[in-house]
Length: 49
Length: 204
Image (cartoon, each protein chain N blue to C red):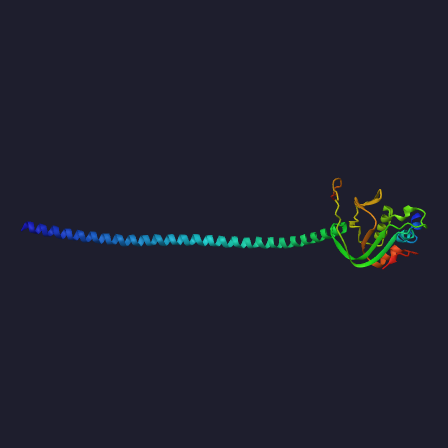
């Protein structure tokens, strides 16, 4: 219920109401780089079936 | 006279002996020659038989090697197909995990802190907070965005967004206003989701 009230106009709308600058652009060729952090595998192990 | 007869007889005997000896030597030579030829022929025959056996063995080995080669070729072809499938699966998984660069159609959201206004009672509302970014990420993911990035930081399943003083940490990296959020996915769906009902975001 709380979430529904908060998101009545969408999160971007809420931010805009707070006088934040919000613009949404559609682009046909967006490039997103790969994750450059580390994914650790120290404690987890594969479960063999 | 008697001595002459004896001498002639001895001479004849010697001649006959010499003739016999010569004949014997000739016969021996011819026989030896025939025997040696026979031996040579036998040796050649033996050699020929040995080489034939070797040739047959080599042909058998060749046949066997060809069969093994066929088996290896078939196995290699099967393995290549397996390897190709595995490589393709790894690529796909890496893409889903955010471990590869990706491109495609989508939406770019520019978000910046607001300017002070007398209408805004709480100055904190003018700033971008970590919670705002989390909500936007949730919204985008909910709208089917396949890849999301905030100021160059790719959002993956281990990403965390927290506040650290006056900056926001995304994947442990500090970011601040303005924030550029890129999302690859179905444009209309993402834009509709970000606007929702009564929404009035600027769409260009």
